Length: 153
Image 1 (cartoon, rainbow, N blue to C red):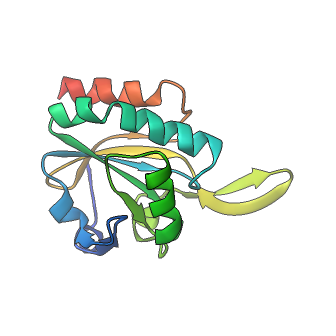
Image 2: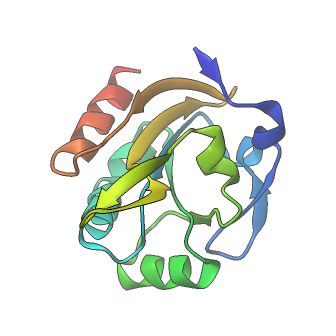
Image 3: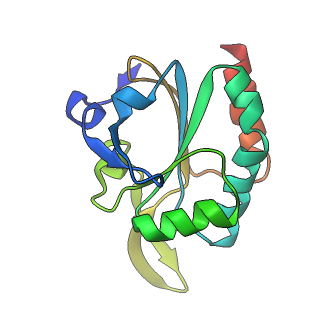
């Protein structure tokens, strides 16, 4: 299994509740970290609403959820409030988590190339081991796939 870099594990992250906490302190037993390109875009909104809808099922399995993008804290807070998300979001403006999880990829939109987050999800345990990863995520059905893996644990 791949383990999260110790430096990143202990790096303070800025959450939408305005706290600064380390990933190490956030992980109780299992944690779903989902990375999305940009707040308030159609795919990101749908994915976040899907995780919100199944949040209680994840919590019942001792698994928390944390959404991550490179958006500003204010944009993340507005996004969380707009969709009443029951979990926190990370404003990873310095790309600490994005770099660690290697989710920044070259993208192409309307013929223009740029660097951005490739929609990805990771299941992590309390020791920082990545138990499962999903890359190039397609939103429909994704949350159910993640939940089924958590149920198997």
